[in-house]
Length: 377
Image (cartoon, rainbow, N blue to C red; front, top):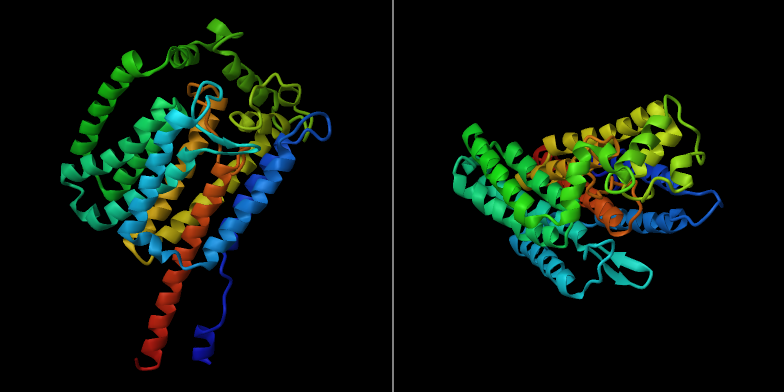
């Protein structure tokens, strides 16, 4: 009887991860739908969602433990670095940034692959050295991995993804147990880098965005327009929202990029405060499940990779919502699973698929060990 229970087949996917991710994706498609009143990205995004879910199911079914190997991790990192470098020479500017490779109707943003690559590299590096993180050398080396990709993204220029890369690295440093002294040193270094970027690195329009963030009313029809319209959309949703499909700020196109960079504002207008609370609860359920998986992970790599995914998603959510509420400067950042776009959605479901596979293989190893003990092995 015990042996039969140990060998009973189980699902190769995790509904507690897949269901929240699907819910968020469908809410995004519903928000970007125009219900026949104009061009909409919803049908295309639904097709991308099908592909993304298929990627999740495939990766969940495979044995993804090979991603722990150093050659695999470094190959993924090198590929991301090369693609980001090629963008600067081969890609055509879109909205002032060389961030996408376009192949007809299909476009690909290498920064999304770079996030997965940085996540894997940091998980691999810290899984071996987290007990030695007190040595500042490891902070420098791990930071170099982040800067290798982050600088290329900053040059595109893509300030939003650059901030996400830096937040991911800092978050994983904190999880690994960085000392307060080293954290203070990093803070000083960060202030110096920010000063240099302000005077030498940022484009004029980026500096203007930051200035308009401090006082958006100073240029409502110019640099402060997007932030101002986003705040109007969020506020006009009030308690229960205007109703699905009745968001005037978004559907009448007063709110720019409402299907991508400001989809939270469009959602808040139609669903109201109650809808926003429910949306945050869905994100919370997803993050709690990922943290739970990390706590019982079979290896340090699995734990760091899963926690890194939480930090990556949370950084996007915080940045995107902060911009929509006028709490942060406009940087053009998507929100996980909801915003329109193919590469980021596929990579987000891919990360969940890898985590599901690693967790499943860890449980299988534990069951095999229990079976050997029961049979006297």
